[in-house]
Image 1 (cartoon, helix red, strand yellow):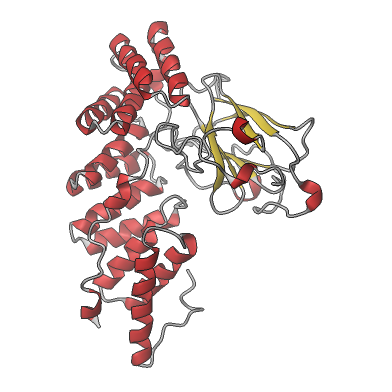
Image 2 (cartoon, rainbow, N blue to C red):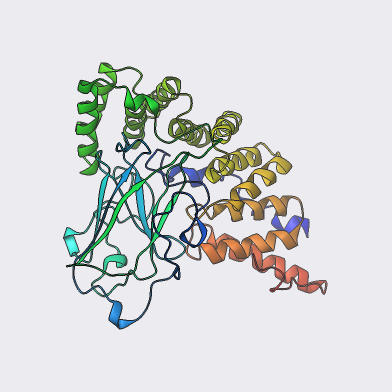
Length: 401
């Protein structure tokens, strides 16, 4: 049976990272969510289902606005954009970012006037499919039971259960504050952003406005001026790296991320982006090492564990790859269900077909239309046929992930 899978091993999981957005503060990766809307940093304590209500009496009949503001413990707005999402199930319904005053507004059910960032992934407009439609904002959609989430690495995650009690088509969440997690060294907000001179800050703000409109070249020019004004402006270097990467200027992107990391060694985003670039470049050893630095800053970042797992898998370190992949699986991995495909392939290499089948099913459950779905189906079919031929077909109930 071990020969049967020799030709189906996915040897280049790194290709999955090519389309994955470079990780920045805009990224929504976080510590674990707050169960039931309670605990430190909770926006609201209303219990409620995670799925939206299907009641026809709770439908959005026109434009609906969900607004609020995010501040730091000091009472000041975060010096960088913060990712805010509305989640109505397994995956984000819509993700936007605060402005540099900390304000955010979701616009739902307004056709072309809706927020353009409908990619349902925590990434900047330059790497998302800006302008793509979304069924989330349809005129008859309901937000009852959906959650608004603010998630910033290094800070307690915030959740608020929406109930569609809109006043004149507007739901006001109010002002919420981010609180640092004790014992976590790293952060997705750079301390250098609080020290920049006014001239550099203005250039960064102009760049953010250009990025919001997906104008990459003007944004690049403003960011280059910002770092020229203040060389230790880690957030500006990080955004500049993302712009370079979006323009496929990989060497410049790498240099910008290295500058950001040097300016603020506890700033997580540039390290994550560097690890991603190293993995894309098949520098597996370097990717594993850089992802390890991220985990030292914040052990809860599941995607860093996934990068380590992919790197170790391609270095044929199956035990280390399995350990890292299982750590990634424990965390929030909605945006990379490929962790199950990776675990399936690790177990295939170890000839542990029962566990391989479990993770094939887990991948197909989480990503039935994913890039690896057909391959997982073929592998699973082969495993089940082979098991049946020896009278030991895997028990579907036992294989439930």
